[in-house]
Length: 191
Image 1 (cartoon, one colour):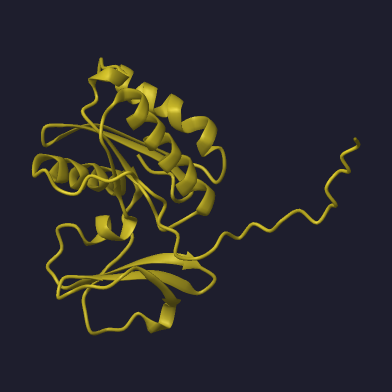
Image 2 (cartoon, rainbow, N blue to C red):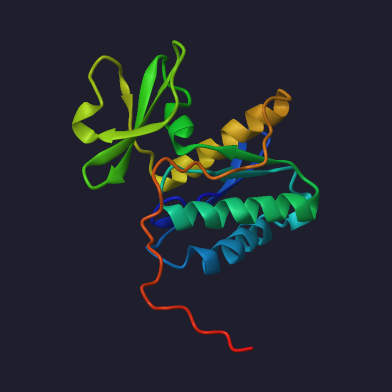
């Protein structure tokens, strides 16, 4: 599942097959909608939480709060179900299946983009001005939410099958949060 942008998206994979994919476009409300959406996907497939072998989650980059919502849910589910959780970056999902080397690019708003090169040594994800992406490599652009969440699942499934990198998902923050501390003075605590 993924809530790193203005959506709440989930996919259920069994073997190499996509059983179900759900995407709800939303600017807000992912925290309230994510768990019911996941329950609906499982119920429609005749499954329950304990039927899951693993949990895969999009870790960003993207919306600060959205990333925290999905990563916290994945970690909670993994702990509660005693199942592995696999975090997959949006940029990795964009590059998945592409001829390497390739540069994954995602909108970071305000004229900026997230960028990461895969293949030929690659590099770490970073944020740059949109005009600084370069033309020396093919570009893997943003995926529609349904394709993104399916690809996140496929990458996680591949890692599990190969005994590859299984991690405790952590948010991939490339830029600091847009939120600012409250300007109101904190309340005075009386003895």
